[in-house]
Every structure is written in C-alpha cells, then in structure tokens.
Length: 462
Ligand SMILES: C[S@@+](CC[C@H](N)C(=O)[O-])C[C@H]1O[C@@H](n2cnc3c(N)ncnc32)[C@H](O)[C@@H]1O
Image 1 (cartoon, rainbow, N blue to C red):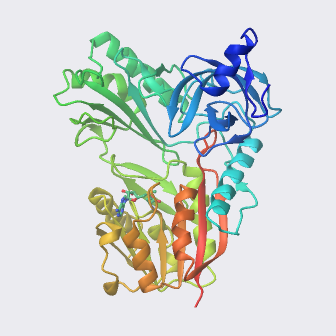
Image 2: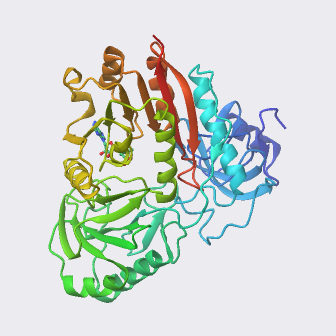
C-alpha cells in the first residue's frame, strides 16, 4: 500500500488498486484514513497527495466510500462504512443523523465537536499569520431544539424537510427534527399532510414549475410565539382558510410568502399575512425584539444572550460615547447595549429590519438610539465619528470599503462579531496595521455543525 494513505478496498485486484491511486474515477470505492476536519465540517484525507473528503466522519477514523463528486478541488466520497471509528462517535438522537445536512456532526460527542471548532478557528488564524488563539469554545447548554428558525424545503415529490449535504436535489422527508422544537415538528407533519390531502403542487427546481417551495418556521423561544410562512411560487393560495386551519394549532402568526424567482431561496418577495401578529417577538436579556419575517435574527436565542453579554463585557472597561453598530439587523446589539453608551447608531441594508429597529427602540423605552437603512460600505463616516464600532457582517465578512473606512477613521475600538473565522482572519490581516486583538471569545451557537461565532475586541495601537 502507498504511503499516501489510500488503501484498496478488499476484493480489488492490485492492478486496479494502482489505477485508483493514479486516477480516481466516479464510482470507485476507496478506503480513506481521515486526517483532518475541513472548514465545511467534512472529514478529509489524502489520496495520491490530493485532498479527498467525506461528510459524517472525523479525524482518526478510516472510512470506505464511493467517489461521487468533485467540490472545489476536493474529491468527495459517499460514506459507506466506518472501518475504524473515532472514540468520540456516539449515539445520535436523530434517526436522520449521518444523512441530513442539518446536523453534520450529531454522531460525535459534544466536547469533541467543540474541540473541532476550536481547531478550525485556530487554523484560520494561524493560516492568516495571526498569533492569537482561542483556548476553547463556550458550549451551548442544550444541543437539541436550540434553533429559533428553520427553513424546511419541499421536494418535487412533495417531501418536506432538509437536504443531504452538498446535494441540492437530494431531499430527506423528515418526520422528526431536533433543531427547532417538538411543536415545529408537528407543524411540519401537519403541513405535509395538508399538501397531500389537497394536492398542493410542489415546486420543481429542474423544470421551474409547481408551487410550494418552503415552510419557514421561526420561534420566540422566550415569548412562546411561533411564525410560520408557507413560501410558494407566484400565484394565489387555492385554499387559504384550509391552510390556516391546518397550521393554526401550531402558530401565532401565519404568512403566505411568494418567491417568484427561480433561485432556490426561502426568502419571499411578497408577504401576505394570513393570521396573527405581523411580527415575531423574542426576548433576549432585558430587551424585547420585534422581528419582520424576512429579517435576520440570531438563530440561537440562549446563546444570543451570551453573545450580547460577551460584547458588553469586552466594551465595559470604557463605556462608548458614540457606538456605531454596523450590520445591525433589528437592533440586537445597539439596543441591547444602549444603556452603556451615550448614543448608538445602527446601520443595516434591510429596510424592514431598520423599521423594526426603530420600533424596538420605542418598545424598550430607548431614546439614545438611531437607525439608518443603508449599505455599511456607503456610510459617510465624517457625519458619525464613532469612538466604538460593532461590526457583525454576513459570512462574506467586511466589504473592502468598510475596512478602508475603519482604517481611515480609526475608531478607538472595534468589536468584531464573526460567524466566519476565515473572513474575520482575512479582514484582521488588513486591520492589524492599526489594531491589535485584546479579547477573543468563541461561542457555539450552532451545535452539531462546523459553524461557530467568534467575537474579538480590536483596540487601536496608536
Ligand atoms: C450576521 S447578521 C447580523 C445582524 C445583527 N447584528 C444581529 O445580531 O441580529 C448580518 C446583517 O447584515 C445585513 N447586511 C448584509 N449586507 C449588508 C450591507 N452591505 N450593509 C449593511 N448591512 C448588511 C444583513 O441584512 C443582516 O441583518
């Protein structure tokens, strides 16, 4: 056997094995020792010096799998057997674990998941030449039913659930799911039954025909509210009363959302309120937030409180005079920390979120917060002059113009909240000409997935 880690699967003749080493073909079955976890949460090893990966396995394991796809330079195996199992393999609560893209790591014990996340963060930092490291990841106290939002998709056959990882057209018809809540599972099963009974046509992404696309369920974990949006293609609902009847036992708000585009998105362009309150309400710490159905909110309520506490603790030694909250959503950080600053200014692209943020300020009796609907990169800094900035960008990280503005205007401190340590590392490589990291904390908002939140306090060096 070669020293690159590849092994012929029993039964293959030597000549065929050599051929696999030279050039793996679709359908070839390969044995692969997994040496590392990649940033997408896939186990990875080398065959002939080239990266080969598979979902649902971890470093220290040896697997057998069939080569089925190439993704960004990685040859992907479909896991068929684990011949050497990690001591961290454990019984997963969900029967779909090991197949469903919703939870890539449910079959590994939680301390091991946290250790994998710590390693992934530290690898990103060291790859970017950043010396600082995180010592650990703050655990989420519950690893089931921790999410407050799920976007369940409808398959062309009327299945309802999630997809296999990395396969846009491989659906799992989920009868249970441990991510949101038992009541959300009941809602999902009731909606599936309703689709079958009424013959509501599912959307077919291949032919771009059909109607029902997504069932989006959002919950206020601390308010007991539940908002359900049925996202369809263009066209009126054939039986809105029947739909409301089917979902009403599980929802405080029901929407019909229309996504007329061919793109596979659960976000709806038009929203029609069928029943209940127009917004979802959630409480984090001392604040109540009203959330528009299309607007972002941190998806783990319990850990969102920890996130807010972390940013608050990092900024506490020097209360901000003017706190600029870039990418502010419905005002999560600026309203949560308004008491600690003389003035807060939130900037966010989503106009609906900004309307909500203003309402949320009023709802919470906050008078020192203002909000602007604008792209963060279009902000005129001369008008604002903040001493403290919170940035919480989407996964892509800061727009280059935002980084440039930060370096031109040099606020004293930046609290960088990142859901993607790779983009944080890229951005900090530029910011480090004027800033140093003085605090860093990783928090697990996403158990059973490779995702992790990283909060960093950057202080101006001169
Ligand atoms: C990770 S979320 C953070 C939201 C908020 N800080 C919170 O904790 O709820 C990122 C936010 O950035 C917004 N966004 C995306 N691109 C933007 C841009 N170019 N300028 C301003 N906001 C943007 C999104 O709409 C989203 O609300």
